[in-house]
Image 1: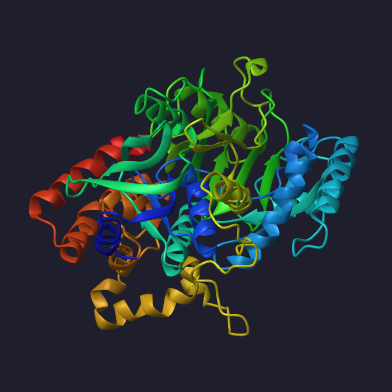
Image 2: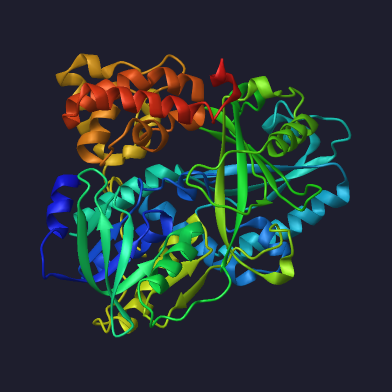
Length: 536
C-alpha cells in the first residue's frame, strides 16, 4: 500500500472507474472493499487520513447495542449481532470477546437486565460469545474490584465484542489494496463533474503535490459521515441542473470519552452503567491496559474533523465514574480525552435530543446519481457496504455480482490451521496479525527500532517505520493517533514521542528538516486538546 503508486494509478487520463467512494472511514472502506472484491474497478479518496474522524473515536465495541432493544430496534440489533460474529471470524487479530458486568442495586433490577440480555442472546443465535448469567453480590465485586459496593445487590454478566477501531480501518484499507482497489488519503474532492445533470466524475486535490486530478466514474458513493451534507451540496453547486436536496439530513451528535489509568477498574471485565439521567448507557472498558470511560450524547451545531470534549461532558463523565467507582477520578487523572461525532439521520420529532434518535442508517440517491449514506455504526460497516454496492450496480449500470465479504479474511487475519497465539509480552502487537513476524524483523535488523517510544506506552520505533512503509502514514498524527493509539491512551506521553516519530518519518519519507519541525509543532497543538495535563 504505497501512496506514490496509488497516485500514479489514478493519474491516467481517459480511464473510467466503476465505483468512486468518497470517505475513508468505516462505511467508505466497507463500500470500497465490497466493490473491489466483486471485481469492480474501485477508487476510494479521503480528504484527510483513513479513520481520521468518527471511525477512530468510537467506544471500541463490536456489538448489537443492548440499549437499542429497549427502543424496539429489534431488526438493527439482530443484524448487528450477525455482523459481530462475522467480524470475530474475519478479523480475530483485532476483534475479541469481552465480558461486561451490569451492577444492580435492586433484586428486581437484576432480573430485568437478565431478561433483556437473554433476549439479546436469543437474537444472536449460535455464537462464539458466552451467554448472559446472573451474578451474586460477591461475584460482581470479584469481577469489578473497585466498584462502589454501597447497596449493591447483585448483577448480570454478558458478552460483546471489543476491537481497535482505527487499526481495523487500516487493515481494511490494506485488504482493498490487496484486491487491486485504490485507496488514497489526503485527496479531498474539490468539485464534481456532470453531463446533462448526471454525475460523471470528481476532481480531487493531492494535498502533498498540490495537483488537481480528475476522475471519471460510473457511480459515486458519498460515505463521508457527518460531512455528507457538504458533499451533497457540492454535487448541487457543481451543476445548475441538480435540484437542492432541502434541509440538512445529518444531525450530528457528539460522544466523548475519558481515558484513565487501569487502576481505576482493574480486572478483565468491563462495566456497563445501564441508565443515566439523560437516557444514556455508559461503559467502563479495559482497553490497551488503560480504562476507557464514556460516552456522552450531545447535539452539536457544527462539525469538525477534530472535535473536543466540552467541559460539561468531562464533568458529567467524572461525576458518573465517581458514583460507581470506589477510587474516584478527578480531572487531573485524565490521561486523554477525545470526542467523535455520530452522523445521525435528522428527525424533527427528536427536538434537541439525540439520545433517542435511531442509529440505523439511511441511503439516498440524488437526481444526479450520487449515492449518499447517513447514519450507521462500525459494527455494521460490512452490511452497509453490501447495500451500497447492490444499489451502485443498479445506478451505475454495472454488472450485478454477489457479495464476497461475509467470510472474507481481513488483512493480517491468522491463516486457519496455524498457530494464532502470540506471547503475552507482545500482546499490543496482536492487531498486526500475521504481519507481526515481518514487523519484528525490523528490530532484528536495526536494534534501535526495538526500543519503546515512551516508558508509559508499549509502542516501538519499528511501528513508526512500518506505518510509513506499509500503512500509508504521512504525518506524526497518523502514527501516534491511528497507526498506534498513543494519543488516545496518554496525550502527554504521545507529545513527548513526537520529535522521535518526526525524525523517523523524515528518514523513511525523505522529507525536510523544516517539515519535521512543522510536524512537531502541529502535533503539539493537537495533543494539548486531548488532555489538560499536556498543558503543563
